Amino acid sequence: MTILVALLMFGFLIVAQCCTPEPGVVNVARNGEASQSSVYQFRVMGYANKAIDGNAKRDFHKGFCTHTMKDYEPWWNLDLKKTYNISSIVITGRQDCCMQRLLGAEVRIGDSPDRKNPVCSKVTDVSKPRITLCCGGMLGRYVSVVITGRSEFLTLCELEVYAKEEVAEVIQKNHVCW
Image (cartoon, rainbow, N blue to C red; front, side, top):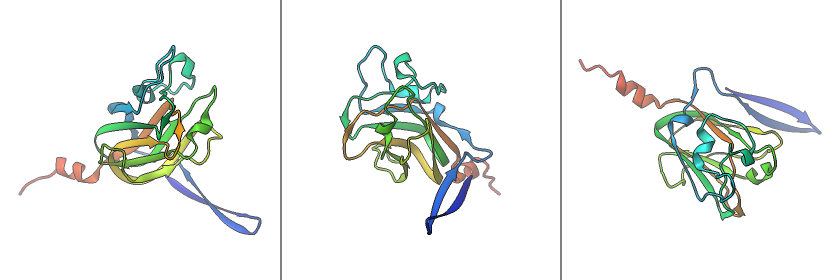
C-alpha cells in the first residue's frame, strides 16, 4: 500500500513515498530462477539463487548472499516464469559492510529477458538493511537489479517480489464460453 506523507520543512513541501506490501500479495520470487553478471570467487560462493532462497540472513562470509565480481554495470536478474502485477520489491543487503554499493541501483520490471525493462525505482537510501521499493502494479516476468554507469560489486542477501498474478491471466483461467 502506498502512503504519501507530506512534510513541511524549511518552507519547502517535501513528498516522501512509503511502501509496504499490500494485503493479498505474496512473495513470488522463490518460484523464479536467478542469474547474475558474474560470481565472486571466494571461500563461499555468491551464487545468484542465494537472493531467493527465503533466508534473509545478511552475512556474505557465512554463505547467505549473492556477490558479483567488480563488473562494469553488474546485474542480477530474476525470471518469475510468468507475468505478475508487482506492487513492491524488498531488498535485504549485507550487515558486515558494503550497503553503499547499492546506491543508485535500478530495479527494472518487464517482459524482456535482457534487463532493458522499465525502471520501477532506484535505490536512494541505504541507511537501513531492508529497502522497500514501490512498483505500483507494474507488469512483468523479469525483475532485475542493475548498477549503471560504474564498475562495482553487486551483493544481495534477499530479494522479495510482492505481486498478484497479472489480471489477464486470471481472467483467462476462469473464462467461460457460452
